[in-house]
Length: 322
Ligand code: 0GY
Image (cartoon, rainbow, N blue to C red; front, side, top):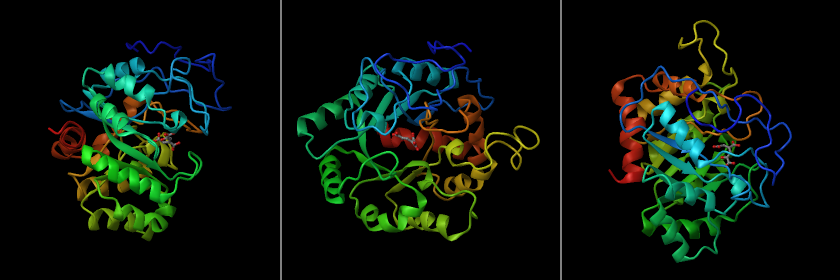
């Protein structure tokens, strides 16, 4: 590995003396392979995080997990190693609504990163403007119960109305089973709405079954809705092990996620984004090699045209206005 990840390639180390990691926490993988798939020029990793470092940017008291550190320098080293040009850094729930680590990463990115923040009702206009100046372009509303405490929908709607004039959008994270209950709220949002990880479908269900059909209907009926077709490692039941040849479509890593992501990319090619999700919080059974995750992209976006839209055109339009 040729990147200064600043931690041992294996192992179970305690990253910051200030915090003790959640028991069983899986650290990000410090020896990512060089992808075989060559990313197009201008490609954006549109979903990744920074964690701390905890000594510099303490984790939030209300957090549901305590991760290992994952610094901006380590993220930027991974970006360069994989062949991305830019990042979209999404505020992780372990930092709550304290966006200092995110903003610090944006300010040190030389314009190569944009951000998605978490804010509360009490945020001031000056704070929003300062975040915008630093490169924040959206807020994230999280409905995954294991990650956050409940926030009333009227508070979220008020925040959405306040960030709209800044040209920001709303990123939503939820589980597929909760889409029916959240439908009215989501479809009333006044901004572009970006869904994390395709709304977390249960990929053991049929791709043409009612659960995924509802998500497709959500995108079909609402042209302001975009989707990240990210996180095969999180959604897959089949897991990272190939059945036959490593790169084989039907037998390869995370093969059960391919039909879902590919259906979304092919139907909505101008409203999809892709990201590594580094440093991969809360994975339980394996930590992916980010180089192999990049090699997954041509399975879900099989043509150079789809790859360019997914990796270059769409994220640059949404986050850099270009
Ligand atoms: C992700 C997924 C997860 C966590 C977070 O902010 C977060 O803590 O997003 C998860 O645990 O599913 O997109 O990183």
